[in-house]
Image 1 (tube, rainbow, N blue to C red):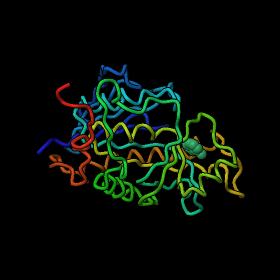
Image 2: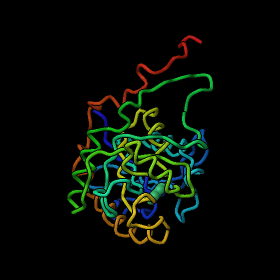
Image 3: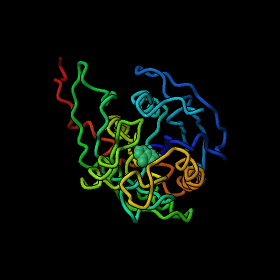
Image 4: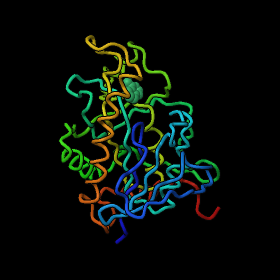
Length: 272
Ligand code: ADE
């Protein structure tokens, strides 16, 4: 058995976790440089928890410049076993409305200007991403979010775009036709790196807008997003507070194999 440690990577609007016992901001060094910020470590509901504001306090990292490898590595070094991404997103579906949360279970990665792997320099690995999120952790997040009275969608495909500009209407309609449900700028390469780090990963995408495909909603602008973000962030704080109650303080190996992702993934000969 391993001690559960929850990691939260908080997106826009979520910059701290109230009620964290013994909370302390810790600086963590990694071979990939510094994470987005110091990491707030403490205990919530009897479970250890580490919180990292993805964009840094004061929102200083753009989606492209977030140090994704350092962030995941730092969480791993602190002992995180269960990593939850909380982020804002746009919706491609009428029924997925602003204020709703989506427990993402698939990704389409359209980012192109980010370091996406820990491997490749002397050691080559190809992990499976067929099922990029952990269903066990996703269920815990869904239950914790539902308990806040949020309308939660169980499953959805997240299209990760490079940004920082929002999509054109033509792109928005294209991504919709591809079957994407929501769009954001930060879950990739985060999900890929979490898998390489053998962390259970779940993504809670909080809808702020209808992107730019919807005939009755104008183009996306940041002022409208920030208005919805406030309410979403309040529900996200409730979700985080409820999460320890949904996970055991000690955990066995992940039934979905997230914590053994490298067992059959490394190609480089061991005796090199
Ligand atoms: N984050 C919030 N809304 C978004 C959108 N429409 N596109 C990309 N990222 C977003």
